[in-house]
Image (spheres, rainbow, N blue to C red):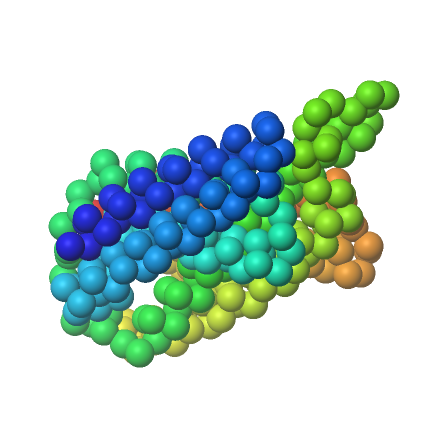
Length: 271
């Protein structure tokens, strides 16, 4: 049942991607509304897939790479829908939906069997840690997309005659404000994930910190975003500089999330 819901969710996200891209080309508001409707439908189906898998597994399904990528996409869509509700920036969907759809297409090619949870890892900290981490990752993914849009729009403004894309993207001020708000949400989530992760590690392995590759790179990523927020607040970095930092920060997130888990041996390595 969870696989069926997952496939239906992916189909809805792909439809949303098409509608949002058509909106970006045509600027027809009806296309944006269709994109939003399919995104919401996909999110509902995706949530059903995660909940049914949770019921079948008996634990939060974030053990395998299949489950982790699915949860990452779910968290990204959740953050996007909140931003869309509060800020009404449909063009953001033209970047977020392709990103999540591509990740889910790759997910579909991975082994989808349910893996048992190691009894040593059963802890109340696990749910708080993983949900906080993925909400942070989702927020950083949306900030990454907003940064890409900002740089595209900034490039349009530098032209003597702005192209058609200029009229299809939000203002630089709107994008900069959105990116700041999303990062302000994602950074505390990452902080909570690191703290609860250390608590979970203590209960599971008897040590708060063991310098496992995932732990180390999570801390490095935290420092990157801490520096990003500091330069914005203390040094007044806005706009282009902040956008480049958001892109660099997301690259660190992706390496921490996927690179470390796939390339380096440790307690968080995927089988």
